[in-house]
Length: 184
Image (cartoon, rainbow, N blue to C red; front, side, top):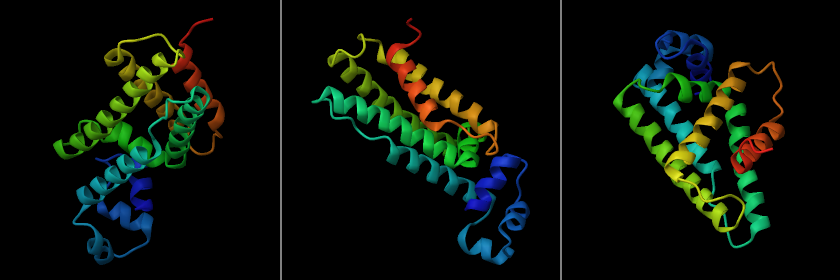
């Protein structure tokens, strides 16, 4: 899976063949086919892995205690930033190459997006209830925040692993942007 992640991540979906994955993994063709029916099956397994990991890292926030809720929201962002930077190839694959590829992949990414929309909408409602933010139109602000996070992460992923990312700084800046926008 790691070789597939790296190969798809560097070559893109259309530029990757089973032979490329076999070479990167250092395995025989027969071994590959014990686990996957082909390139598409490996790709779908990687998308499934990405979706599951993101959904595991984003957790519900307990809004009964403002201080704890703020900490939980920041922790969610930190975990997601860490995940996306720890799996740069998979992040690039899922956020760039998988979009519009086929119906199955679109459904998986739609499921992830719907999950994120629900979680962010809940965070926006809770934030307004707790007095942290003003009430907002969740159907506008939610996708805007998710889009901002995706774009920031794609920019950092594109720099490659040789460029050290300030993970804590990225998570904090994204949190502050979500909380305060561009207010002075």
